[in-house]
Image 1 (cartoon, rainbow over the protein chains, first blue to last red):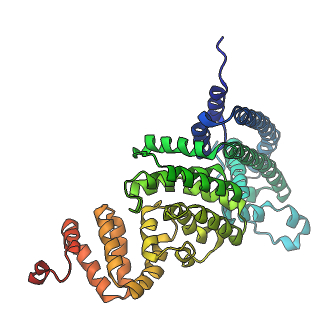
Image 2: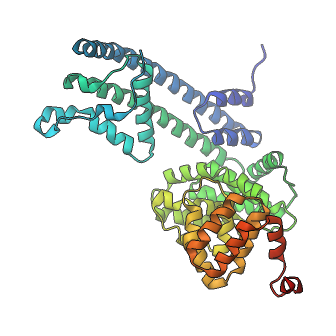
Image 3: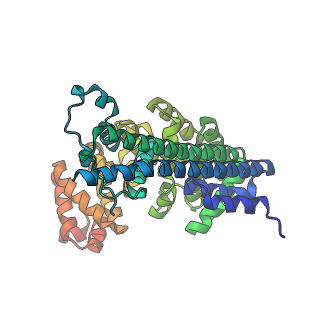
Length: 82
Length: 352
């Protein structure tokens, strides 16, 4: 199995990152001249971002599930009062 | 089952909150309506996103809160508030990530970065990327100044592009072409967004811009990125746009082409130019610079701009400008350009 380089991993994470397109472009352009330590930091920041976004997505789904029931009941109440 | 209408009017209360203190604290209507009318801030965006989720995701049919017991409104409010919290958290993650990444970029050798941006610009915009030690030195200075002023990598990129575009020409004193300007201005909005976050006051922004200008050295081209930021001062800080050219050390007619060449969405830029700055220019320098601008706009085939200029010319109440504007509207643009190139006292014109 071929191991991805740091650059490749960064490019892959950038594709799904929430950062602005211009920032993505800057990172891509800067990669070839960045020091290894900076690249590793970039990779770690992007990984952390992904982790946080996944957690927030799960939280969001829980909230929607929690309130969906309530909102349906409200709709039923409304239908009864009509 | 349909989606809830996002029209906030359906939430408008007919009950006076003051007569019901309990309701006053739980009534979601005012907070929802208020959120809609807030200025476009990140918090507001997150709130709208939360509202969209309530309306778009939860399939509960045509829910009309007006017909529901007031006590139930609290559930909608809480729902929105919790989703809003998540949306805000997402925005914070985005911002934090961008800031962290920018630091890594800014930690990189500025000269190397400048070279990279030069190459990229060369690929994108087909510019000649001639070698110039002066460019590299100046770009390095500018980037250092940017770093010191705390600007983000977006600005670094913008500076790099400006310098490259200017210095790649054989004659760096020639103004940038429209495409070159657009290449620079395409980063403008991001620059503004980042700078607004960073520099909360006009004073701080001005100080940062001064540093950039100073680092630009003898060539004034670096001010062009700064000017784009400057034209948005009014939007950002309710700043008097009249001061922008003066603050940037530019004559009005040096500033004017930049407004026309910039992003078409520049808010109020052209109006400010035409209403306020042109009359000053005409008073101070006569008609020639304004005429030249008209001609340049025509040559670049930006006819909507010409129409706008000519319309505004009548508001300037300058007879000469009005006459000129009339000719623009009725004349063939090519002929007008040729005409404008011919001095008024030439035999050809005299004959005509």
